[in-house]
Image (cartoon, rainbow, N blue to C red; front, side, top):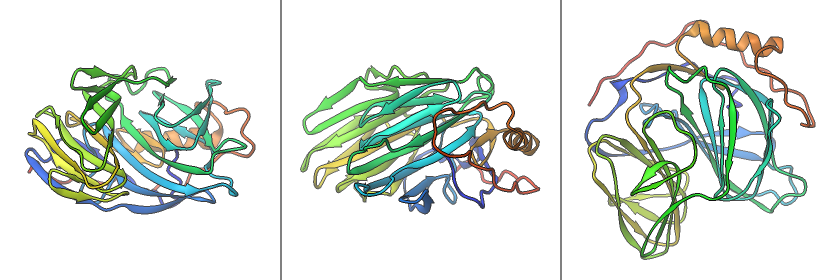
Length: 321
C-alpha cells in the first residue's frame, strides 16, 4: 500500500538508538490518514518516538469499513524501493497488480507479500463487485543492505501454518512462532502472527528474548501483559521477554509483530526506504521520469505523483534505554 501523505516527511529509522533493551508497556496512539475516497487508515508506525519494531517499519490499520455502495480501496500505481509490503485482511478483498505482471486477489488471512528490492510499482483496489466490509492491515518490512537491491518479486500464500491453544489460534504470517514457520520469504530474523482469541480465553505466547515486539489490536477487547489494547492501537513491548500473557475480554483479533532490532540506520520517505537523502531523491526523480519502476497495466486511472521532497535529511537521534 502507498503512503498517500502529500506532506510526507523524511524519517531516520533503525539502528539501536530507538530500541528499548528491556520489557516495557508503551501504548502507541495512531495518526489518522485518508487513503483514497472512502478509506481512512490509522498509522501506528512510524510513530512519534517509535520508528520501527525489528524490521517492521510501517503499519497501517483500516476498517472495518462498510463499502457496499462505495469504491472501497483505490490506490493508483505507485513505486516502492528497499522494502517488502505485507497485505493482511480480516474482511474483504484487495486486487494487487504490479509492474512484473502479477495479478492476484488477496483474501482474508492470506499473505500477499511483495518484495520491492531495487524497484517495483503496483496498484491496489477493491474488486468489482466487492464484499460489504473492508478490514485489514498494511505493513512494510525494511530490507537489509545485502538484499535491498535484489530483483523484485511477489508471493501469494493462501495456506499458512498456525499455532493453537485453548481459545487461541495464531496464524504465522512471516517468520517463525513456537515451531511453526511461514512460507513467506524473509531477510532478517522476524515474526508476524495473526492472533484470534475467543472471549474469556487466557494464553501465554512463547517469545524470543532477543527480539523486540509490539501487538496491534485489530478487533474486540483484549489485555496484553495486563494492558487493555483497543482496536486501532498498538502496544510496544521492548526486548527481553520469553513469553507474553494474553487475555480476551471478548472475541478479539490481534497482530504480533517482532524481530531482532534492525541494526542499520535507514531513511524512509513516501514509498521508499534508502540510506541517504540523495538516494531517495534519485528514486523520486526516476519515478517522475517514468524510469526504473516499470509500468502497471490494467489499472483504470493514472499513476500516483510523488510529493515534494524536503531538501534536508533528518539527523539520527535517541539512544538505547
